[in-house]
Image (cartoon, rainbow, N blue to C red):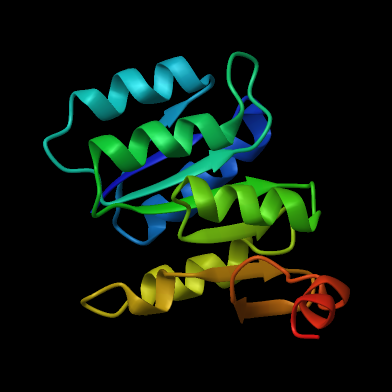
Length: 151
């Protein structure tokens, strides 16, 4: 499974690359969004990518959008310390399959990669944070607005 890890923090990138290599994945690391996109363009198929939210040259969300366009079947993970609902919604809107809050979710993600289902269903529409994994159910609705509309 061809895998890309884009994170400007060497320690994070190195840890994830080594971790995924133990799962027998073909892993490539990149420090910037530009470098990651350049690597991804060379692949006929990218199966899995983990993208940091804050990169020196791009927002991870913009990298996710471009990777989704290049590799529509890839499993794309947005990794960040920013555990804010608007960032979660933006990541999924951009094409992320998983929203992972660092550093809590790495081992859960690793377990799911090891136990991945043939269709990747256990790796789609998922939030992994300090509380564990849960499905992403879409943007949070404002209940006051909904109540006003229903009157």
